[in-house]
Length: 154
Image (cartoon, rainbow, N blue to C red):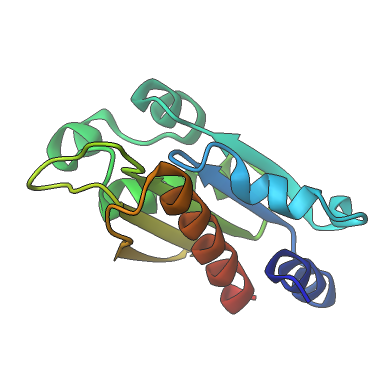
């Protein structure tokens, strides 16, 4: 059974709608879920918020949070996940913001991805260092990690 299918089945069983706020994955989580027939029963909507302006306008990420911590931070991931819940009818939201590469910096290296998971008022965040394995591989790993977070959150 695929990871995306597992997420959908758990969401159906829990009668929960899900959403995703994606930056570096550019919609890959929602694409994985909506590739499966019947996903419309639990996939509420998705947000691709690649720019800081999109994060602010669509999800309510505070400009001060972006200025203080940068887009690739657990603080921004938390606000993205909360914002996705607020701007949707979903009960569970995952957020992804990271540096897929190429590039990065000493303080924020290529392959660093921050995740948020929001359910109700509870939000958990984490940072995963996927390493400089190439843009395509970092994005795929981030997609799969986000799907696992959704699955485990259900």
